[in-house]
Image 1: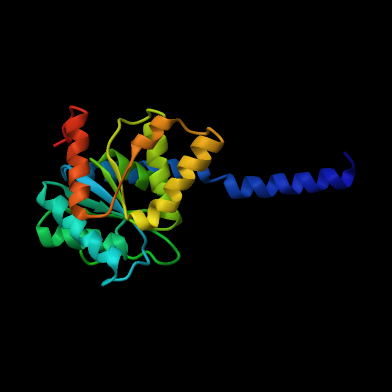
Image 2 (image 1 turned 120 degrees about the horizontal axis):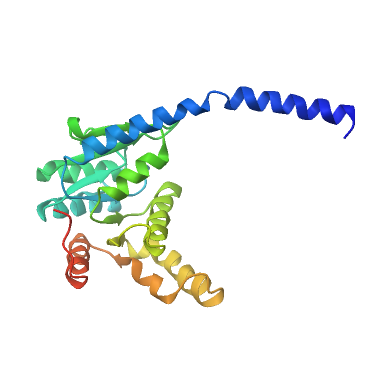
Length: 235
């Protein structure tokens, strides 16, 4: 290594130390978010996490469907957890609020789109800086995941939950996709490409989720899951 290369790597190392030198203190911020989340969420009771796009507008098909899903789940004895923002998240919180069920918002600090919706219970709005802590709260305190049409964030939550169940890192729970028209192409790709063409998943992995169109089917799928597995929601 010549002198020019030595200087370059020395400068890079110095810059790296400047950027990462204080990061050991991040662990305390992480701990604080975990503590707040665990303390608040453990007092709420059984809930279902609802996911979907922040860009879905009131009055549209899936916004109104999300409201109805949340209302029916609330009437079935569940509170509703969302990401706390607009769109499908707002619809989920609205349905819970109007049905008198706990309405939880797990907000994340983002440079765009995300802002708290007005349907979250004031004592059940929790703010997070770290996505991974927020994800833990979604999984740990939910009796089921209900996934409506969404973008990258929705897909992220969906596939992370399926991965955790598939690898038995968490106990199995219902994952219900809502909207055959929206999810159909993805399901076909999972079956035809992941499973049949490349063998990247097992046939039994297709049973880790269900696909429905109506709010009645959502409640039915969740109830059927706990009945067929001889389990009860963690009430």
